[in-house]
Image (cartoon, rainbow, N blue to C red):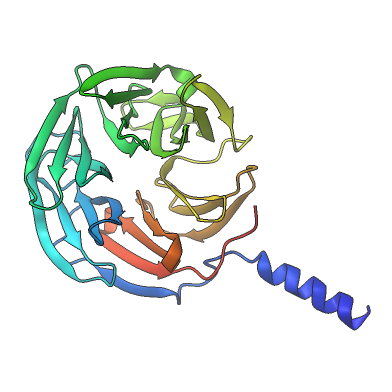
Length: 295
């Protein structure tokens, strides 16, 4: 083979290597005092990282769940920055307000003071999980057990969509007028949260509510969903401990394999920083990701 052709081939292979092929990119790890860390979220405006802790059972109204406040370099600012929650999971912010899902309600917290601003009860909700916020502040929250998505807009709560076609949605992310969904699967068994078929990663056009599959094959028990900053997505599989990269056209690459319980991560594209909660191991790890597979 000609030397120029060989170099071109090697360079192409290099660019398409997985971003996390080894374990030596870990920057820091925190575990002391943690109890079921479920969702990590980086609030750009405040410069702080927030981490929800389920603490008790995932669906128990026990009042022992909380949210921690940290820095991106792994310094714990306050372990129980906001407590008294039941089973807090998804976190997102808008205009200085942090929203958290909490079994059958969503709670609004003022980031500057740490005080509760609002509580919205969702009648009939069984297991609220991830939460996403649109550009104008509309809050979307997934009820994984009921296979439903609710929306809270202009102080009014409504059912956005419900049904088996949503595949028991878990992870949510809004980009402009598109809601991206990491699904748990179909044929859901509420006794053990198993499914007959794994979930897809798909998108919903918010105005029309039209669903479009991104992964054409069942992909996993999907949990966290974040953009990679290059047109693709980083997605976790809670049950199988997989960290995926998924392109906009549906190509799936396994970046890393961990233990069961890899939950709702945060990713900061400008720093190539991945913050990954290990729910079953009571740990939060931070990784520097070198590069992403192409679209």
